[in-house]
Each structure stands twice: as structure tokens, then as C-alpha cells.
Image (cartoon, rainbow, N blue to C red):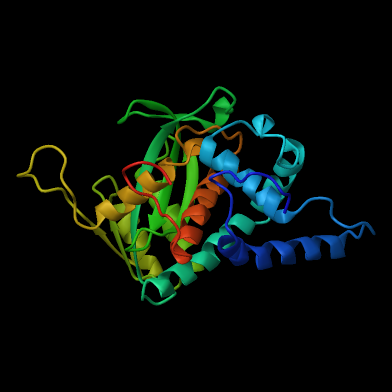
Length: 279
């Protein structure tokens, strides 16, 4: 790792130890496929710190500080890890560790689903945007599925006009493939019969959780508050306050990166997100 003054987003030694084996194995496999005869010129830890910096601060890639690897190099690794599923794999591996540390089984059995419509930046292709008529937002829609303590198990991003049912079906398919033990899921009233029926076909009991009609204004809704808190956690990463990504797969990867950032802190007992201040 280069000797420089650290940024708040940098990985500690303990957090890097959680990621290093997977990233080192990826680099070795890549070099085995395409041997160059030359030693790698950049440290993987420096590259991952650069990616975390972009994710946490929200800056464009070209604005990376000069004490990181060049923005072209950082983006090259980011795109490779995105396309080869490395971010999703790291998230999957860390989920198990975080659950065990919390005194739970590594494989979750229950989940919670929610979506978020978000505005996009000017560089996002119009063809990948739609209008969420209910929320009056032109942009994209994020769907996340978490376990019962808020750890993100599945992510999908599409145009904001895609229905809750379609998003829910995508998330259930993704989660069941990765976590066959899931047998229960809670959703809000935006999800209708199609999600319930699809869940039944997968062996997942999908329950719609209703708000209390006797309580006006904001109030905590059973089960649903967990996934809503998780959305709040990832929104602390400024790259996610708006969708800046050209590809929806990049949008999903940015959510995975925010999740990895939070998971590594949870596992190593470092500062975790709160609603007051930053971390």
C-alpha cells in the first residue's frame, strides 16, 4: 500500500484482511489466463480504497485525488470486478461472517423487500430511465432484499416505471438462488398477488405488511422498518444519493460496494452508520 495520509473511507488492516483473499485470487486467475511476464503495477488495496472513495464521496472518477491510482486504472478494476461478479461475491461472503458474528446462522431464512425510486444525472441514457407515476420521479428504481437485521442479500436496478411486482420477482429469484434457505419474506402493500404467487412457487411465504390505519403520519411498521433502515444506510454513500451510472449493472455494484463498506465495519467492530453524524 502506498504511504500517504489516509482518507476516512480507507480500509483498515482488519477490513482489508477480509477482502484480500478474494481479490488476490481474482488477480492470480486473471494473470494465469493472460500472462504478461510482468509484476502488477498497482496494489489492489489502493484500488479498492479508490473505489470506496468514489462511492463514499460521490465524486466523478476523473476527480480522484492524485495519491490514488490513476482514475483510468481504478475504473478498469472496478469495471472488471463489476462484470465478473466480484462485488456480489464479496457481499455474499461477508453476509455469512456478519450473521455469525451477530449470533445467527450464516444462511438467512427470512427476508424483507422494498424499492426506492431515485432521480438520475444527465449522463444516464434516456433508454434506461422511466417515470414512477406514483412518486412523480423520472429516473431509476432500486430494489433491495435484506435479512431480518438489514443485511443486503439481493439487489436489482431498472427504470423507475417498472412495477413493484416485477422488482419483487427479480429479487426473490436472485435471493433464492443465492440463499436456498429463505422461506419467508415481508413486503409492503405496493407488492400484489404476483409476488405472493411467485414466492409460493419458490417455496417462500410472502406476507404483505399493512400500515396501521388508525395512526396518521409516520410510524414504524412491523418488519418493513428493517429494509427502510438499510436504504438509509446506503444513502449515506453520496454516490447513491442520485443514480450517476450509465449501466444499471454499475448502479447495482455501487449498492454492493456500500454494503461491503458497512459489512466490513460490522465484522471488525469499527464505527458503523448511525443517523447522527457520519462515520
